[in-house]
Image (tube, rainbow, N blue to C red; front, side, top):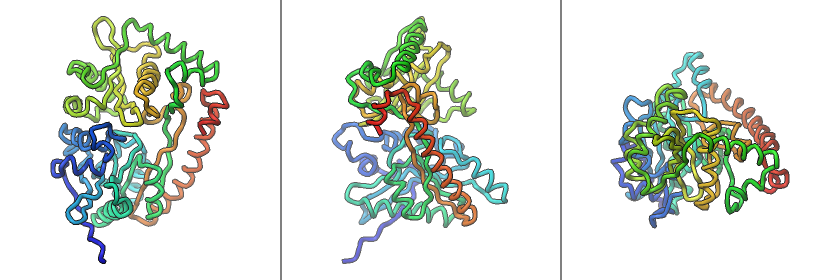
Length: 395
């Protein structure tokens, strides 16, 4: 019996594919209406980015969604973008771009399999159940072929899963290891249960920080689902603009993104706001997956001691426990998270570079970086806030 042929198509917009078809690959576990494991690869989230103008013309993120069909059935897809820069990726290759262009090459445009502006680990090669091997292989080969045929410098797959990193490496892609800080729920009944797992000195420090934060002169509230209202997004947009201006020069997401997400994803979002004298003065936005709370954005218009730690880390831990989630991820970078219960975790990406000489240099760099990342995770974990026996159990 001859195997059915796989057809690879590239789509310029998610409007060209039905939400139920995309999500049958991206989040089949949510077909019954429950939460997806990963809210960021759903048709809802990616469409919100596109429909709001957060990606598309003028942004440096041009959608080129990759799809694989067998006998007319969508068996696999991937959020693929043509990139004109390296902003909003959080696994940095600016030094690669500089070196390549110093040598006379053109690093941009490049191809990126990623969720824009979202340093959260999840599947990047979205395969319908039952088509795992053939679907994954078709997407990887299709993406590499697309880059090669168009004489692009490179292809990058960022914040993929460990299994995808392994399979990609077996197919000839270069594997990269970086790190983030995640909080793990060890079956805690409440925040005090988590605190009992810490060393006494760290418990004392956290209690002190929480007391300082609570002295900002107002009230902290959590809004989720139907309790989220348009005025909450008006306040958060002010915070987000301030953070974006300081960190990136300009916000990545448009105001319209939050309006669209409010209407389509409110049940999978939690906004933690600090209100003082009738005005919201700070806030942190989280997305909720089936197993994970994803801390995404923070901002403020008034600065108060330790309020950032309270909204972004301690309130997130309380919310994750209340929702029965396995972990809370606090976004990219930040060794200051270690003292607040978030341990270092390895993150993964894959890379293909067309120029053989440059690819060899990058591979040598990645080999040294992987060893350094492994050592750093080991050292930082040893310096973590947990009692020694607790750390050994988590390892």
